[in-house]
Image: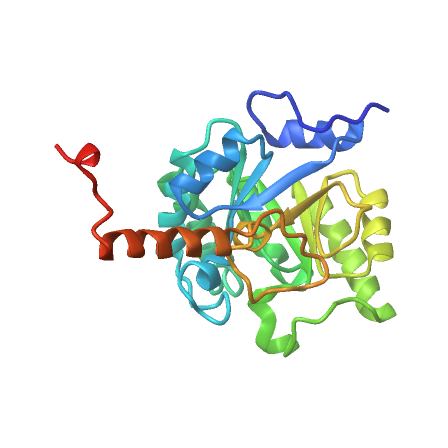
Length: 273
């Protein structure tokens, strides 16, 4: 089995993601919320861009993902899609847009697809949202599942701690993952669960399993881009690897700009017309 560092596929589709799992090529996934960042990530070779409801936290400053609206998610998705030439774009359906009413879930999903041009949507939950997933899939909309720690249910859990450590919750997660595959989901995100459980799910299912805090034995990884680039300095979970310290770089740049403006060093004659 050959393993490639970066896919040479020109355009990523659900079919390509399935092929990547089958040939053992890991899937790279990051969040994106705006045109400029999406352009950079796409050109760098990312496979999947998630327009995450984490925009509620990192873009709007909310404590949880719950406040962000469907209209706001569509706005972010539109911005990301405009910057993408290769990556597969998935959009989180926000809290309240799908949980209780499958007809509303279908309307929400169709709005996202029609108004943003995204390639698929993501929902949190298993058997409890079976009807909504079925209705959305019936319209031909690709669905990515999300199990384990589901941030939209934070007030139910009461904590962001690791999920499915107990046997009963682990068994339900396995059953939910199998159900999502049977319903027709093209992929599942597993968040903050034991690595052994994530490995078991990834090996037992045919569809790609993407992990965040779920260990190395899944089919791909996803992180929040502001976390992995070091723009957000406060969030320091065990699963996060920082690939840059943009907080320091950006702070230094702004301080140098302020200093140059105050000292009349900027602009110089060469920077004037």
